[in-house]
Length: 341
Ligand SMILES: *[C@@H]1O[C@H](CO)[C@@H](O)[C@H](O)[C@H]1NC(C)=O
Ligand SMILES: *[C@@H]1O[C@H](CO)[C@@H](O)[C@H](O)[C@H]1NC(C)=O
Ligand SMILES: *[C@@H]1O[C@H](CO)[C@@H](O)[C@H](O)[C@H]1NC(C)=O
Ligand SMILES: *[C@@H]1O[C@H](CO)[C@@H](O)[C@H](O)[C@H]1NC(C)=O
Ligand SMILES: *[C@@H]1O[C@H](CO)[C@@H](O)[C@H](O)[C@H]1NC(C)=O
Image 1 (cartoon, rainbow, N blue to C red):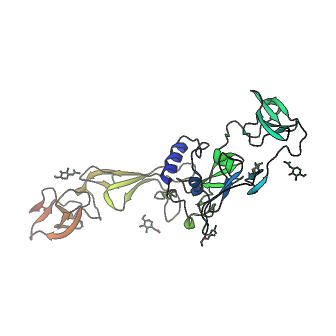
Image 2 (image 1 turned 180 degrees about the vertical axis):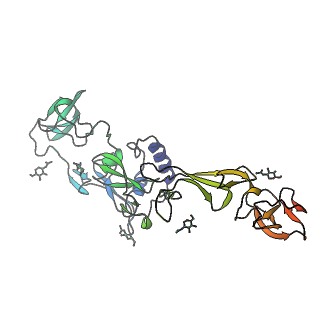
Image 3 (image 1 turned 90 degrees about the vertical axis):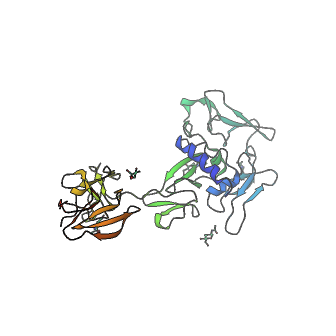
């Protein structure tokens, strides 16, 4: 994939700056094709009479030039006579369609097209065919929508993949590149050049789908938002906090908090406390940093830990009770909540 990492870093930096307009300034033709649906044709950048046709299933990337006297029309996808002055009288002024700031015009003189710009602060009025003040004619392309070199080459409404976000894409409207988002639950299929449901999307190879929404704070019985403190089903020393819903939407970023080493979260006291004072039905070797641990429901048994998991169970002699704190069997029964029935 030639240049893919180059595109990626270029676009990433650019989109971080929120400036998508210049993103494609330095892309090669084959790099542009990588972002476009197969077999898309466009005007070769910085030319008027050369075209590029991106590779398809059975065709390779192809480049060609128009016959002498013709220009490539990217909207029609073919070459056309280029003399804009053909039907004009000698000395006529006409609008320069390639001008992005409305200042450009063309002077028809001796069968030739002479390009020029209106003086500063004036723009070309296509109907009065003269340079006027900006208050006299609203330039359809606003100053903030700068033309993109890529869109100057692509036909109207051509779409390009966003190499980073699969649920977004770019679209040329006129000469301006716009960033677009697919509808909810959809993403941009780089082969089809369209948004499709996420479960059957074929993302551009470096584009990622958005992280699925975190639904931990949705009650899976009622379907409503839940708030407060919740157990971590994998560890007794961790817990979640679901915040209040915001604008009717459940907390999508619940806090996941760990108690200090040796403590478990107690849902009655809503606090972290000595793990021997908390019932935990999960493996008590997890996160314990101990060799032997008490066993839930049996104060005479103990578990042996290895690699943070219980690997075997043992039993103290009759009349002895296991004490995790002292790492051995003793004749004192401390009735730890951790091992009580
Ligand atoms: C390429 O092949 C795929 C799968 O056979 C097909 O769906 C797609 O329409 C083809 N694309 C083109 C541009 O022919
Ligand atoms: C000039 O007029 C002819 C005939 O009406 C038309 O086909 C052609 O597109 C026109 N050319 C331009 C540049 O307007
Ligand atoms: C491109 O499409 C937009 C919206 O459909 C339209 O307003 C605009 O005139 C078109 N631009 C060109 C150059 O055809
Ligand atoms: C709700 O989620 C919990 C864990 O998150 C799971 O144990 C339980 O089976 C789920 N209940 C239903 C009705 O899906
Ligand atoms: C676990 O115990 C070992 C040896 O006693 C110690 O080096 C390590 O820092 C402890 N780990 C934690 C997380 O406290």
